[in-house]
Every structure is written in C-alpha cells, then in structure tokens.
Amino acid sequence: MSPRGVAVPDIRERLFAAAESVVARGGPGALTSRAVTEEAGCAKGMLHTHFAGGLDEFVAELVLDRFARTAAIAAELPQRAGQETVAANLTTVMGALLTSGGPAMAGIALTRPGAAARFRDAMAAGAPGFTAVQESVAAYLTAEQRQERVAADADPEALALALVATAHHLLMTSWPGAPDPAAQLDRVIAALTSPGTAR
Image (cartoon, rainbow, N blue to C red; front, side, top):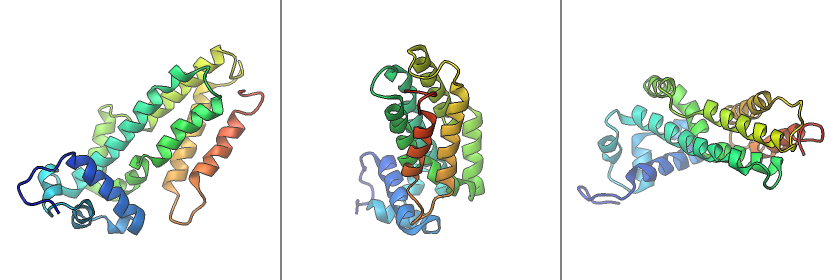
C-alpha cells in the first residue's frame, strides 16, 4: 500500500482500473470507496483526495474517461476506409466499446443520482459518448460507400445507429454468465455487412 503523503503515479487510472475490477468481480453492489482503494493498493482516503465529490464524482469521471477513449478510437475509423474488410474495421471499434468499461459503468452511474447528474451535465456540454461513436461509424460507412465497399443504396446513419444501439443494449442487459456480448455483436455486424449491404 502506498504510504500516506507519497505521490502515486497515474493515480486516476489506477483507481479507475481498480473500480472496474471490483465491479467485474463483485457486481455493482461491491463498488465502495474502500473497495476501490484496497483494490488499487493505496491509502483509504486517496479516492476522496483526487475526487472531491466522492464516489459519485469518481464514477462519473470514470464513465466519461472510458467513453472518451472509445470515441477517440472510433474517430480514427473513417481513415481506415478501403483497408481490411468493413466487418473487421467495425468489429475493432465495437469491440473497444464493449470492453471500454464506460458503458457498463454508466449503468452504475444511473443508480447514483449524484453521478448521473454529473454524467448528464457532461454529455449536455459535449463530452463524447455513444453519439460520438455513432457519428464516426456513419462517417466511416459513408467513406466506404464512396469506395464501393458499401452498397450505394445503404443508409450509413441507420446502420451506425443499429450497431451502436445494439452495443448499448448488450452492455446494459449483460450480467455475469450471460451470453458473450461480443459474439452477439459479431452476428449483427455480419448481417449488416452481408452481400448487398457491404463487401
């Protein structure tokens, strides 16, 4: 455990990763400040030192951080038009969304009024979330359409909405022991990129 008063490198990420481990192992009910700091191997007050708003601020910031990371990956997607296959490129981004932790933790944020309010305010102020990912996927599919790797009569915005909405649904309805959401999303990607839609 880190001694009191000693700086801990990358403490935010360390605490974020610890919270994800706590939830993955014990479910949403296991998420407490003490559980997070114990998992991170740091002093008990470390979370409150870095997040003055306590666990609510911490959860909101964790969700926002993970969404921002996924949105950054998605933003690079249009540059991949013409490379590999459409299905492979979509799988990369949707896989990042499924494993980012942000959407799954968003479900926890919604059960904590303080965290939910902070998250909503950040989204309203333009923080990246599902919408940013959806816009990047639509831009990518439009770029592939220009290269004739997506059918000319396909609707990129509708396809992007279908993919992101499916990922959202799978994340919000999954639980330990549930079918692998990645496998289910792969089926949707395969259906949406089948001959006649994309190639």
